[in-house]
Structure formats: C-alpha cells, structure tokens
Amino acid sequence: MDLTIFEKAEMKLANGVLYLLELAGIVLAAYAVVVVWLKGQPPRSGRWWGAARQLSRRSFAALFGTLGLSFSLVMHLILFHRDQQIWLAVGVLTVVVLLLVLNWIRLARSHPDRIG
Image (tube, rainbow, N blue to C red; front, side):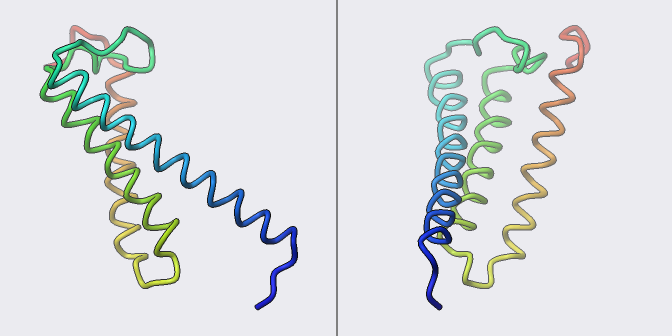
C-alpha cells in the first residue's frame, strides 16, 4: 500500500496529536499523585478543578491519577496497537475515562459545601 506524501504527512500529524494527548494524561496523573498526594500541596485554585479541590488529597489523587492513566493508556493503545485486536479494551477504557470525566464535571459544577 503506497501512501502519497500528503497521506503520510496526515498520518504523522494524527500520530503526533495522539502522542501529545497521551503525554497530557501522564502529566495529569503525575500532578495528582506526586504533587497533590505525596508532596501534600493542594490543587491550584481554578474553576476547572471545581469542588474537587475540597476532596482529600488521597481521593483527589485517586480520581485524577486514574483518569490520567486511563486516558493515556487509551491513547497509547490507539497509537501503537491499532492494527491488533484491541478494540474491546479500548472501548472499556474509554467508558472508564468517560465515567471519570463525568464525575469531574459533576464535581466542577457542584458547590464545595455539598461534597461529602
């Protein structure tokens, strides 16, 4: 299968985007676990954390560490193993990521006093 120069460039661009998304997941997981949980620094203030800032350090690290690693693994599987039969695993991990993101959205929209 011969690819044209434009198709090769398009494939490289798509792979680059997937790689950057994979790195973003790793950075999120590292921030949650190393900075917030192990070093004990509270998450920086900002609207996008929402009421998740009120979670315990351990809960924050568990939520965002799992989200970051799951997202990173989905991107890795798509990037490096797309020719193999991994689509069931990608589907399951995608559901995990979506559930964690929905939980984050719920926390971001809720009032900090209602976190239990």
